[in-house]
Figure 1 (cartoon, one colour):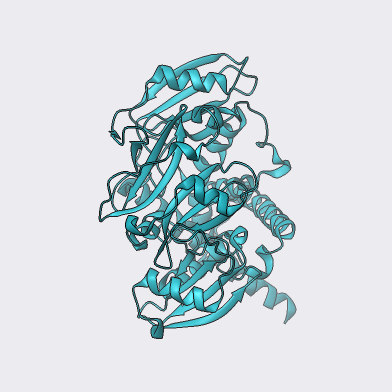
Figure 2 (tube, helix red, strand yellow):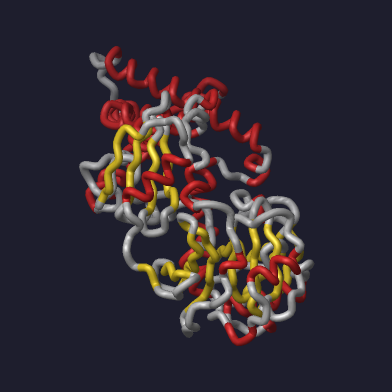
Length: 440
């Protein structure tokens, strides 16, 4: 898990890299005209311009999404075999002859367990050295998931046994949850018994495997206990850390009102590396968020078409945050240039600087706001902060005194994992031997 991480996925960076550059010359409809063609129910919370199947298209999203071609106003109503092959060909930059249609996926398989909301999807096999498999959403007409022979093999050694992500089990959420809770609970009890025996059996002179099992148990037993215990807490028994907190309307307040697509009449200057444009309302003003391949999105004013490089003022961020959480005092606010114990890097580094706002509500809710985009990027209540220490702290030794991705953390985790594996393997061998001895 340290090196393979989780299940195979399509990262936002790779998705953006594989998107074709926008063809502004083919755009014939404004965002508001396209919205009329879409017959979207209500006001979209997000609108995007991108290329789909070689044509510019607007995507309007709220709870669901509707995609309209920007050159004709036609809706994407169906993604079947022909469309899936065309989308896969554009994504991989390979001829359609090297793509094989594998059918429609309407129920989760082994690799779509974390993408069930994107179902149904079309599956396509790619004839390349990596044995790539693509899953294409019928709703968005985009590649939602990418797996290769290597990522699938690593998942079978890492994420699948680690999280018990076997398709026949994980597809039934309540049963999977109970299995994880009970197995980790039993494992915790056995680890506690082993630690007790380490003290009570100290005078005993063990030899052979029993001696080695005793030594590894003394050295790694406590870490095995905390690892299993924190794994139990990852399932949040009795949902003890859920709920509570205030400020659910802060993200909407920072936008300064609903998205008005009529404000986007002029497009920013076309560039060869421009892949996607998001239409945003930030603090009451319309902005384009221009996405390129190797950089953070750039804000461009929809009125002046000038790029915005400076941060939004802390005072304005606090004012809008207060409007989204009326009647609750702000206990503390600080602009952080580095990560703290709760807003910290994992696989992807969240943006810096960040404005941390602590509210004086009963749950002591903290918000982290990106001052460059004026958007909420994280939120923690008092119980969620406690869970962070007793889950991430115990499970992956995620502490600030060393770098989470650094060599010291990696060396310590590898050493402890080897010790825990050795302890468990010896215990299994001893148990099997005793079982056979009692039977035969």
